[in-house]
Each structure stands twice: as structure tokens, then as C-alpha cells.
Image (cartoon, rainbow, N blue to C red; front, side, top):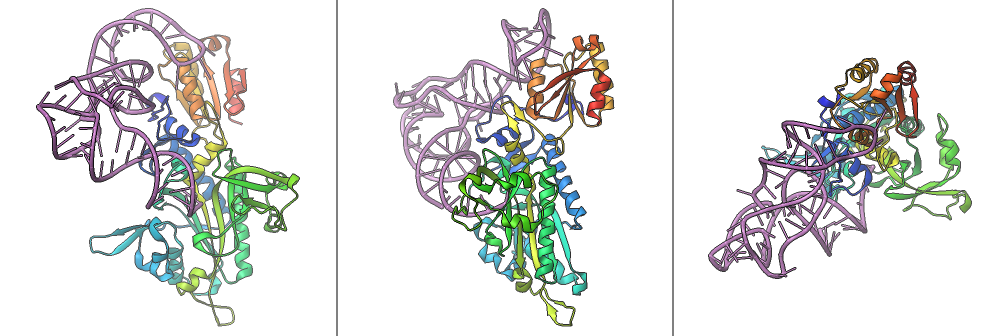
Length: 425
RNA sequence: CGGGGUGUAGCUCAGCCUGGUAGAGCGCUAGCUUUGGGAGCUAGAAGCCGGAGGUUCGAAUCCUCUCGCCCCGACCA
């Protein structure tokens, strides 16, 4: 993509509406624009990141055997009356009346809908276990939206639902998802520690929250130092993790039987980006999801639900990865892998060298604008692509380009060939 | 939902107290000069001063109401 053609409205100054760093950077880097309190438009740069996160989430869910569906955002109130949540949910639920005076709502979550789908379309326990998921917009009418995309009212969420014949099987589904989360966050380039959690309004008992560690996190977290090693692994099992202590400030109890001695507790701040719940039969029972079981007797499937705040992750990852100049994207979700800076647009030799390299880089944002060098460096640092290639008249004359890592700031001068080899490896 | 702010040009803000008909910096447009870390000069364009009432000869400024947005708290992916 040529920057001269790209819709990328960057800002030099911080908009007053944004108070925290990820929100500021997302506005300044031209990723989002606010359209109403807690409601955002995703501009091309932001959308690329959002899609990349989605892609990784989707790949890991699919790999674990979950199947993607897409449920509507607007649902009928009657469905929610079946579970009793239409009245229980409160003002966070956005309620709508259609032209026929039917009561509708914009879904804040989807247990009811997915349970209905199962009830209406599954005939026997032999079809279990199944895990379905979707990546869809949700709406929760927060009293006080804030922190940009991290605490919006409209947000993009991956929500998954598992159905099993019994508790043992449900626990396996839970563990599978637990591992999916572990791998997903790892691929996203952040450390997300699973903490024992309350199950909140959704209900159930077995539950973990995944918190990304970031200095600006909303809640304080306390965890066993053993997590440092654990997080470096490729896979974890639930048994191991269940024994390790990790809690947010509201649940933290130094006297808890599992709590390690004080010198083995790490204190940090965290942003919740995912949660896994074992729901039991709360919804299946309430909504009369009943299947013929192995011995002919009826069974009520055991459910689990698993959420990842996809849009929130964009902000959360920025909170975890930035410096005073801008964002530092992990390669896995970067909107482009390389930013190519032409220091003298209009100079035949420099243009030719840039065009040549641009053609050979599959994921490259080429700053071909007629701007001063300082502007280009500043914008490139702000948007945070993992690699920068700088080409100017001096370098071209000497047959070299400069390669810079955004995250480490490390620069090296290389021939075009070795720069290409480095970037394409 | 309680408490506190704030709304003036695309962005950041001054002007308001003490009414007299709109300002700065950055950005934008054009020209010249510059050109390896957010350039300089010159000339421009750009605002129903959030909205509605009221007071007044006259309102960005004073009064009333209203809407938006932000912050703290309670609540949450």
C-alpha cells in the first residue's frame, strides 16, 4: 500500500477526549474515530489489526474443533424471557421496539440464542460434544464507557459455547478452550495470565479470567512467580494451573490456602481480555434443552461459554506494547510488516530503489509522500509497524538501506538483498 | 446512577469574570526557499462560539432550559 493513497488520518496532537495511552495512540495513528460515546468506526489501519486478531482467534478455535456460526445482533425479548434474563439483565441491555411494537434487544451475549439453536436442531446425545462460536458485535449499554475501544458499548467479541453429555466431558471442553486461549494470547504477542474468577451475571462455577499484564491495567493482579515459567511453555494443562495462585485485587487473599509466601507473589496490573466459564445446566435447564441419553433416559446437556474481547484486545495490546513515540505491533497482528520510507520522493534513483523493494515485499506500507524526513519518521514510529526500511540518496549511492526494528530501535545498514532476505525470512 | 468538568476553525486552546460583532499555534491551499528526525518566509481558505429560549440598543461573554463529550466513584468482555 502506498501511503500517498492510503486513508490514514494521523494526528500530531492528543485529542482531549482520550485519556489513556492506547486510546490516544489509536486516534493519533488513524485507526479509529469515535462516533458516539463508546461507539467507534474502524478506519483501514485499525481494521487491519482487528482482522488479524480475529484471524488468529479463528484459527485456534477451528484447530480445536470448534465451528463458526454467525448469530444476529438483534434478538427477540421472548427468547430472553425463557431464561429469565430479560428482566434480570438491567439497563445494560439495549432494548428496542420494532414497528409492530415487538420487544427486541441488541444482544449483549448469546447463551439464549445458541441454546435455542441446539434445542431445535440436535436430536440425540450422540451429536455431542459440540462447540460453536462466533465473532460478532455485541452491545452493552455501559453507564460510563471509557478507555476508547477497551471499554466501549459496542464491541467485537468472540463467544463460544460448548455442549456436553456430562460434567466430565464438559470439563474436557473447558480445558480445551483453556488451552486455546493460552495459545491464542501467546500468538498475539502478549502475556495473559489465567486467574480464578467469579462467574458474574452469566452464572456457573468453574471460571478463569485471562488478564494481559500492562502497567495501565484496570485491576491489580497477584500471581505466583511460577507463572513466569509456565507462560513460556507451548501448552499447559488445567490441573497444573488450577493449583497455582493468581487473583485480581478484588479476589486476592494472601491467606488463601493456595497463596504462595509473599516473596513468591508477583504484583502487576492487568486488563481482562478473555474469560472461560463452566455453566453447567443453567441455560439448558431453563430453556428445556433435553436430549435422549445413552440409556434411554433424558439428559440435560452441560454447557460452557468462552469469550474473548477482540476489539478490546487491540487497545490492550497497545497498552502492553508502546513507547513515547507510538505503537509497537507484534508481527503476528501488525497491519503491515514493513514500513518503507522514501527519504526523497521525486529523486529518480531513490524512487527506483524504493519501487524495487516495494514490489518485493508482500506486506509493506510505502511512504511515498512528498514530506520531510522528520514527518515520515514520526508517522512511521507512531503507527508502529514492526520493521522500517529507510532509503535515501546517500544510501542509494552506497548501495545500502537502513533496517530498523520498531520494538528495539536497533538499526543496521544492509544491502537491499540482505534486507530483503531478513524481512522475508 | 451519584459527584466534578467541558463544548469557540480539522487538532490543541485563548477570549467569557468586567457584553461592542472572532483570535493564536499546529494542520490545510498556493508560491519561493529548504530537505536524514514533526522546516522558514509570503499570501490565502476555513467557525450559526453545541442547541433553544430569555435579558439588552447590542450576547461567544449574563440568565434559564436542553444535548453532547470527558474525568472520579459504583458496574462491566
